[in-house]
Amino acid sequence: MSAQPPIEPLVRAHLAVEPVVRGIHPEQFGLPTPCTEWSVRDILGHLTGLNQVFVALLTGQAPPPRGQDPLGDDPIGAYLDSAAALEAAFGQPGALERVFTGPLGDATGAERMKIRIYDLLAHGWDLAQATGQHLEVPDDVAEASWEFARTQLGDGPRAHRFREPQPVDDDAPAIDRLVAFLGRPLEGPTRP
Image (cartoon, rainbow, N blue to C red; front, side, top):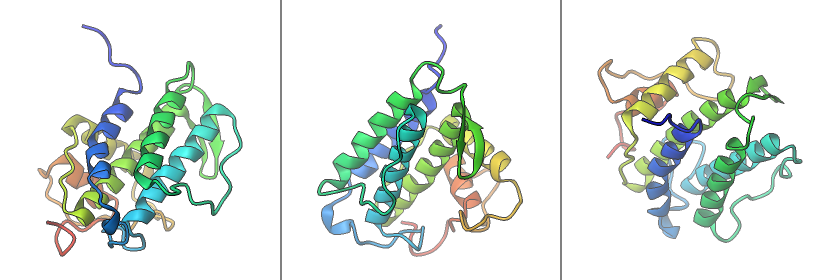
């Protein structure tokens, strides 16, 4: 039995979110999402832009200019391209072991990859909720993400990054526990 490639959790998270992204119709870009400040297009822009920022960080390039629209005329294609570039950047030899300095401090590539995964899964869930789709996440990937997010964020102030944790059953699926921990209500008009 061979060992899992180190970036396998990221690849599996991308594979879970990709059908949701591909299932978004252009007329849905303006729809509201459970991440109430952002529309569907805003979330796609956030995911794509942060992927580009992480690629720049991991490869030693200058980050994309602030305020630039990362989606252009092909939001779905831009997201998919950025996801592939992110996997390639994290897959570089030594990328997971190196320490990178960013706005939130120092972290190894492995820690930064885990941050990208929980952000990706939470926003993939937002996109699925907003567009009436279902996000199918491997439970082990969601469970690992939830555990990392709890460790990384703890009970401290959320500093405008996430809302306060929402109620969720202890035996709920791991993706529900993750998004509730990151401030998404599991009941209400955004949940099909």
